[in-house]
Every structure is written in C-alpha cells, then in structure tokens.
Length: 240
Ligand code: MLT
Image 1 (cartoon, rainbow, N blue to C red):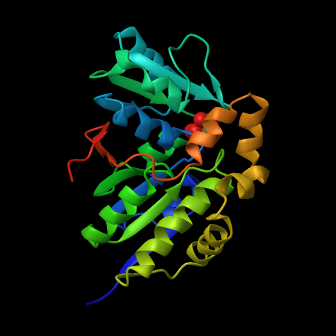
Image 2: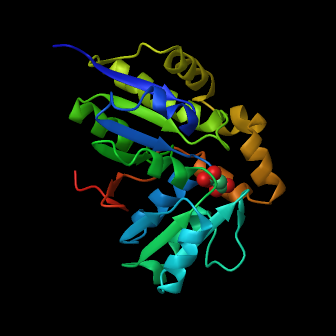
C-alpha cells in the first residue's frame, strides 16, 4: 500500500506551496490560539467562530456574540476575552458559541478553510490528533501559524511531533526538508518542552505579559482528548 504524505509548513505565507495536495490540514498555534480552542470546546463551548480581523469581530459583537480578540498577546480593548485558554473554562460559556480573533491562529485557520478537512492541533490534544490521523490514513499537512508570517519554534515542534508519530506508524512519509527539520526540533524538545522553549520569542513575549500560567498549560501535552474541526465556518468538536 502506497504511503501517505505528512509535511510541515512553517507559516501561512508558505501555504500556497503546499495547498491542494493534502486532504487534511492540521492548524497549529500552540501559544495560544489552538490550545485555547481545545480548552473552550473541552469545557462545553458549543462552537468557536474564527475571524481574521477586528472589524469582523466587532460585527459579531454587535449581534450579541461573546467575542475573544487578541493582538500582540494582549486582549483587544472593548472585547470580552483575549486568547488565554483559562478564559474559556468559565462555566457560563457552556453551550455558547463564541467568536475568536487572534494575531496568527485564526488567520491561519481561515487561510486553510478550502481544504477537505481542517482540524485544530496543539500539544494539549497531541495524542488525540495523531491517533485520529493514523486512523484516517489520508495526506496530512501541519500548518504552523508562526508569528506574523515568520517561523516560530513551538508550532514547528508540534508539527514535528505529529509528522514523526505518523511516520513511525509505518503508513506515512515526508519529502520536504521543512518536515525533516521539524522532526529534529521535536526530538530535541520532546522530553522538556518548557525548558527547550525558554528561548521561544512568543514565550518571552507572553512572559513579559505575566502569562506564565498560560505558557505552562499550552506546553503540557495530552491534557485534552478531543479534536476541534472546522465545519461551515465554525469550529466544533469532531464526533470521531
Ligand atoms: C496567535 O494567534 O498569534 C497567538 O495565539 C497569540 C497569542 O495568543 O498570544
């Protein structure tokens, strides 16, 4: 049986070079958008609507939606939440649809929306993602959100974790050097994400904002056993 492809794309800017060859795109934004989305759905939020701009977020807010908006790691003035996973653990959000706009993650999700299937990956739901992808046995692209179309360490390490696990299953292979490099970054980091990612630019940015609790949550793997998936513009829990 021919092996399926699994590759790692470092930023949304490079997505055009990978687009169209992968049935499943896993969007990754470890610090913090995809970790926050996993946390929200795991805590009973019924759907997360990802929007790329603050204007779109404002339009939803005017319609009465609860809206999370983050730029540069901080809550955008005038909105209910930012991008902390802990903001989405509130019991009053159970059963609610919320809207989310972040610097990179929600933009990456919308860039990939034409793919056959878009799922949401992070370290917090890593094992759920890899088990699912192995079962699906389709071509997979790990799309890293990066930082403003630049490479970042944590998303690439998560992409490397996914690609390496799929390759080790025996049913997948990678061709791109980006995937090989992601694998070696993952191999270096996997036993101590917090220690390895001390040098991550976004971790330093969040640390300056006193968001260490968020960092620790987002860098702790396999806390959540669910897969968020994009359906008709809304991110919901996949019934798999
Ligand atoms: C992003 O979407 O760029 C990040 O998640 C930003 C953040 O939450 O700090």
